[in-house]
Length: 116
Length: 116
Image (cartoon, rainbow over all chains, first blue to last red; front, side):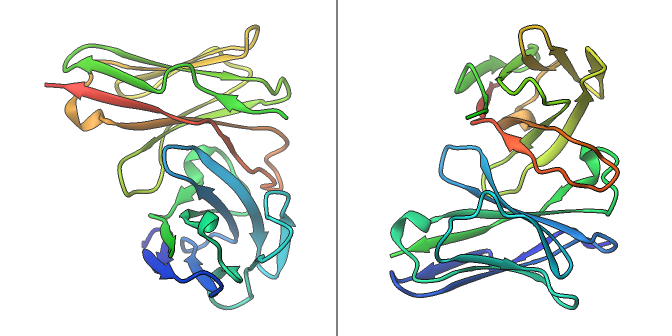
């Protein structure tokens, strides 16, 4: 049973370009969370989605950032017109419909975005 | 706003000693806490969790203590090993489990260095 799969693991973009990060949840998981982590800091919540529905996007910047989790395919975090401050590690986590405990929330290995 | 924070950014211990990592939280509504371990270049890994109706919970070589009166959480690692070297995060959440509507709030992390 594959874990949470994120790709790409490393992405370099020039300022002004677009970045697309993908997350495939664990098999049987229908909820996805995206977090951002700056160096030497904790993970900051961005958005919580289930298939075809955004449940909570209170942590998403109002501009340039968007997320989706379509009926088919991975969840995608999209960052338009990237700036250097977007450089960070972006982690995806997934959970079943009913989160029984913390050990049913699984994190991927992250996508490291570098904006040059 | 409400946040979860840690007292010590770096903790250095000798192999075989016990380690204690502390966490203070400010959201009195938080009722569920998780400790994660994060190794360099990897995603957070679940260690142990505790609900607010408990004061203590034990796992394999790890114990989590919760003091709701002073909003303090600690992680104790017995007989610390070199493989325990990592950054440790506490995370908290609140709400109900039945619909899976939980996003985690992470602290800033403590780096544990185990000296051989």
